[in-house]
Image (cartoon, rainbow, N blue to C red; front, side, top):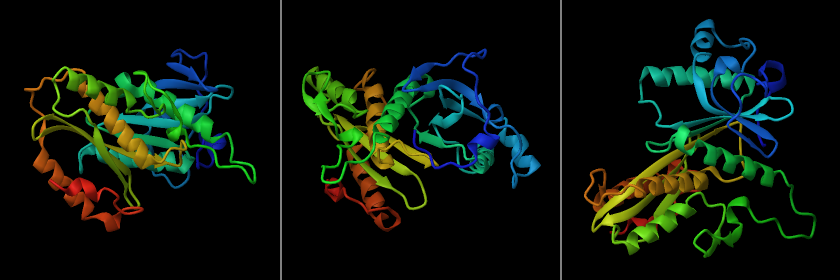
Length: 292
């Protein structure tokens, strides 16, 4: 599992595999634990962290923690869910948690979404991340050989029998959209999306499907990678997660339900996003979506 953390052996505490709370999942040489406080993962206050920061941060937690099977050392801590409101106490506590995690070199993957939740989606997301890390660790091509296909780009047979990207977290949602269209619960079977990466900030992915004429179900997800990479570009991962969230909402879709976004409003939001292209890594590649 790829991380760019530092002094983990010195200050990170190993989680025992035979402890009182067994792992949720064992996969790829890793154990996945649920709901751990930062204080359970760190031995002592690191240099540069104030007492106030420390006392606040160690009470904060992570939804999932991935540890090495043999040593129990945390490899990445994962958060999934809505980010705290700007200026809130939760946001301030999160900054202190980030400061401590950074000081001890704890890799963190933070997924911000109004729909995705650790208890419902965490196992699938973390299993995907572990598999992507293992694939990325396979090494680079030998001289003269073609570079290996990226984990997200591997082709195979999908659950509906089509050939497609088997490591697309949104594949099931795309199939569900087609089924909903056939049963006349959607006016368009195509799930659309975009992704961007902000300079000095998170990656962001949007996904949407038109439910009624001019009315769309829209999901937006942010991905923050701190001292961590699973080998899949974070902006592409964010879009796939947004599509996954769309699929979750499609399963209980009521065509008369609230929460749909007018298509014209969505396009205006995309245009405002495009206007900030200078703030993005690699600019904005989705101008074709700005047309009504």
